[in-house]
Length: 174
Image 1 (cartoon, rainbow, N blue to C red):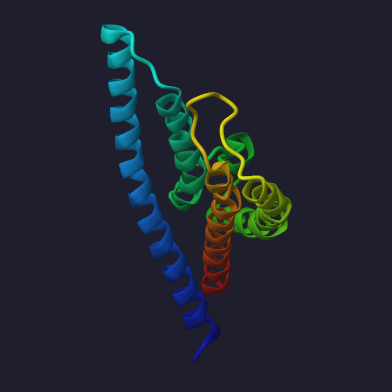
Image 2 (cartoon, rainbow, N blue to C red):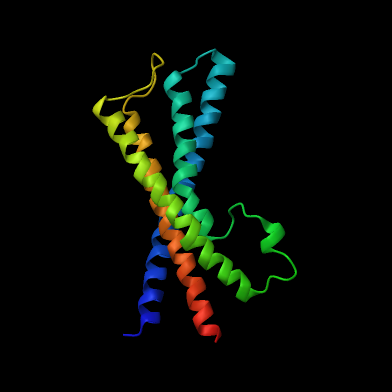
């Protein structure tokens, strides 16, 4: 089996997986909006507030941001220095090289560093059964903190898929 077929399979698997995750995260956005509307309405009309609901809003936003970053990268909607990337001198060949080298030299190592550094953070929160410091806040903070390495793992996978796509483009262009 040629290496290009294997690479295409890997790219397809990662893209499909992150597409699925992204679609799930989209439902969290709807839930977050409804939660904010409910919480704001209860506070404005009945002067009823909840620390747990407020923290849940923050937690959902963190989940959306961390777990949705790979989906954003998949669709090339992330922040980039467009002054260079979109310059008139940048053709598809050069963009493929930027994506390939940027992914493998910067994105993947950065993700590995964050994943490696965050495990102790998650583990400590689990061991100490860390929860909210506010009365009425949410318990089990380690669950939220665990999305840091998970989110960066998903981002790293998508970075690998994008870099491999650029590599295939460069091979097929010749």
